[in-house]
Image 1 (cartoon, each protein chain N blue to C red):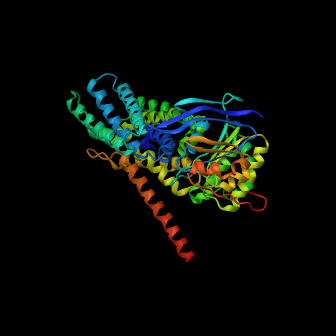
Image 2: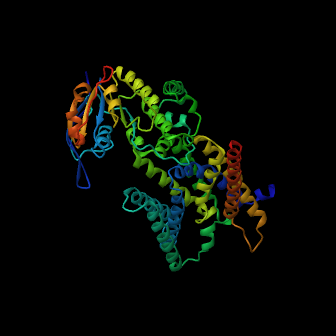
Image 3: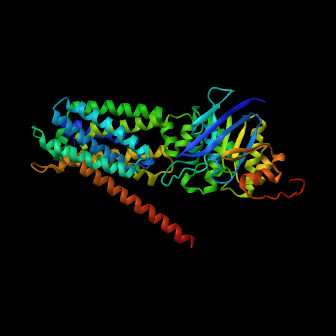
Length: 279
Length: 236
């Protein structure tokens, strides 16, 4: 077990997975309870376009990605709120167009890029600088959530009630989407564009089956997420052998999906048994 | 008697339709004001204007007693929360401005007990019926000592026994000079609980005491047909 810690990239990956396991469910709770779970997917695709723009322009790639993702996510939210189109249609447009922009720009770029690593993440790709970014974003997410919890909670219940309680709904919505989008950008190297949204949504869906209050759902989701992420990263290390490297994101999401299926079946069996015993 | 909300010449236009037409109305601290009017007459819009949720296209809404009012609000369409893990306690507690939860728990339990929902506090909101959810959001509206209580059809999904309990509680709250404005189609609830009635049909057709309202002229004018008022056990 200690051998795994002798590699810097593995230490970085384990720290990164701990930070992501704490922060993703926190934001995921408010995303899921607002019934906009697909926003995570769209934001990760926007991050893909952002990475491609950064690589193509070769101008401070990380900052370009962050700037693009923030601007595009705010535009996405504005369109969803405007009711010009249904939310699912807006998400579909952003989802596909960002993927298209990303693919074209990466193909035009002079740099040699491994698209698989962007799409699925890689343990070898994580640097100490990435971990510093993740830690800064992680601490910000926790602190901002402590101050915004009550507002995000009531917004997730009802917009009118929030407004009557003097809550600036637009500000808190923007804050949530910008934080989610930044978290996705700093975590993409480890988990990849395609699977990162699962870390926002699946732990919450599992926790929803196991608890009966809002606050505990977040804590249980963090616990589940930690368990699956650390297991996924460790398994990825031991299961990978050159040249076939198994991305940890795949293993993490397989574990999360398996747990979700088990608790869902178990809960539904319980309900069925209750119904049968009532007749 | 202090003025709490003052509306002057309020017009609301949506999609080129005039929803509220030149409404001027004052809510005083002693008011238990019932709004009545046919469907689509603008009752919900008027309540939203009073709550600050809708800014009128022309006209003025002022709060003469305070810069910002603390409003206890119950919307007409209650939130649909199909997968929410939120408990009744968490939802009611969100009605408090910013005091620590420990100080609020006692107050929540006491009001919930009065409303008869104290046994529901630890349940998920998704486990409740429509009427129970309405009671939960009603408790939420009352819990943090609001300056004014605005309720959009507060008894629409509630059984008759609970209805009379609610209006009794609201009446006691109103005795402490907390004005209550509510809309209803239930003429009995309106005339029994409210001390003033406003009859809305885009315009303000009538505004006065419940007793004066019971001439069928006002109801007939608003609804467009004759309404008979029968005397029964001292009530009209």
